[in-house]
Length: 503
Image (cartoon, one colour):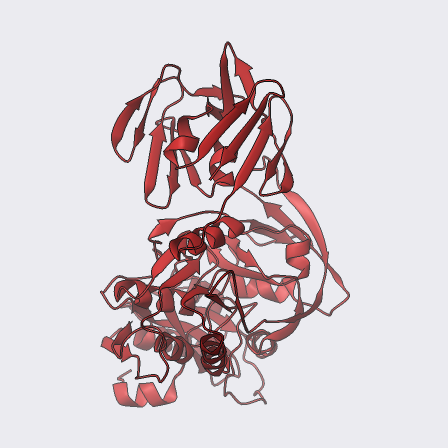
């Protein structure tokens, strides 16, 4: 099948697709479908193979794509975003991309063999039920999802408002899978929010990149400017993306008229640049908040701002959804969704599977916002209070449970490494093979091995008189070891056996 690149650009319905549960896009496809052919029909499979060979972003040999059904043929591609919809399945898909649907309000993607939660939407049944980013949904109403696509999972999770759905969840920090039963509601995808925070800091949050987002951002920036803001926080945490054109339009408010993204097709690269935008706040100090739920269009925006040096990125590494999917209506009435391109940031870095690494690695929603405010010159204080042997703590005025409370060994006070670090906004990782704990906050990196009386702070060895300890599969550190390395102040009250950490 020969292709004409110009014709392709004008006829293909190229979408910057992210997460099938949450998009707010309009897709101009016919509303009436022909009678569907069997998914095992030979002519249908040959049509699918021809489209895959012609348009899939990487080279494919259609002759080597084998299977008895369309789904089996597509599985040979090995791409979680390339899938086939029967007409009724596609109707449900369109309901989701239009932004209003019955469901639980979670963002999902296929990661390997697992349907994985990117993030729950704010104020939705999924969030209220305690679903977390990183959760693997291994079954819906008893039907296994292992090996299923996000599209297939979405079809099972969505349903009439008021009905119930049971998700079986596998969570890394929990030993056994568990069930969560959620009552579906009508999910309305949020748009754009803005306000003035402390002093003269503007705050702009984008929940999606829909058709109206560009106009909403312009309105927000005009109103914030009228209120005299002198700096800005742009929040795209938990934003699964949306329309590519909208991401480019929004980026034009924050970067010069220059490349926003490179779209790498099978037959070449297309560079999309921002146009000159009136009222662009180029002179305002800017911080962009991101997390693992920031995907696709959010990553395009954050990557462009980072590459052009127009703002600082704060949070955790983004999801890594850097590809374009295109919809093809097939002769039998079904629709084929194919990955047809991948994104690069202006400097040429691929997003897919990598994500955007923040300039300052900070965990925790509240702590990320505090850190952004500090970068913009607003003094913030974060208080953490622990009491020896008490399984509760206070973090920024809120009581939280402790699985591993602090204790005294000999004459030394030990505190749980993960809790204290994460309470201060740090990201903690554990290397099982090397028995190495790594703590990262902002640009600070602390590495330690339980049993060894030293740690490495930003690559420099620092000796301690007692080592960190490993107890009950948790790492405990001497009171001041990590807290002071992360820039916090520590106070010990002997009478009440209370530890106070101020950041």
